[in-house]
Length: 385
Image (tube, rainbow, N blue to C red; front, side):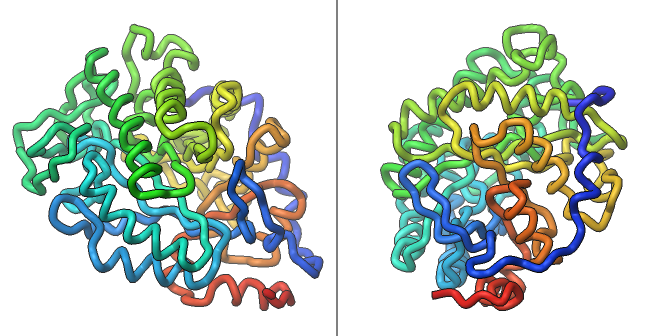
């Protein structure tokens, strides 16, 4: 989503001066209701792919111990790492999958442990598209047979257009309408498994980091001329919107749907945010999405780190993008973001307090600090009850 800008992220920089947090409680520890869910605070464990799946791309012991360590800290939300909805969309041979019932049953072990600690969890659903390694399966992706971890070097990988990720990558097959319908069904059935079998509290649809849905969204990777083609933002967004509709149809009215959305491709400074805001408007107009999780980049090897393109590299890279979205949509939808949010807790609290974001997604910090939630509270002079 690249063009010259009328809506940009530079206008908020002047607001981001250090301040003392107000207490009690600091804004970071305000509770938050999302549909039928109650979050104890605004801290969320971000989705972090471990690529450590067991046989059949199922949950392994590493995942169980990791997520138990997260839930013991009582963050407001725990994002379970990205789970692939179709074996052809795997980014890694050991990526977790949720294309069959056995995988969903294994995931329930983690969900049960998270719920024992009184925490809320969400699973991220994804498809790698042209970045995938592909792979065979011993059963249909909507069936219950466990998948093989063996990668078939001749298997096709799928994308909106026949454009390889880089000069070392395989040229993908341009998806037919039948392929597209299969992907829509794969996301919907994966979401149904996650809610009905694994009993997660929410699902997040991943449209970012250069994955399949991001590839459809970006002019850089979508050269189609059909109803899912490059001619308008509505057509490039159609696959995501169709998936949202079918996911809601499968999981019922209550479980929240989140979208992890790329704001821009990070190919040059001052990329337009106009299309990003237009996509957000289309998402919100569905009436089905509770939260947009803002990220950016990774659509091509030339995508640059977000912080290097912002006017102030000392601000967490996605805060300016998320705050533009929040200002644009106001309270029509919750907004969160990730990316180095733990580098200054006082500033992070101010971002929440001033309504720039609603939820702070933190990844590496939860791995490095086994008591992150209490440490953040202490830095804000707040005692958790």
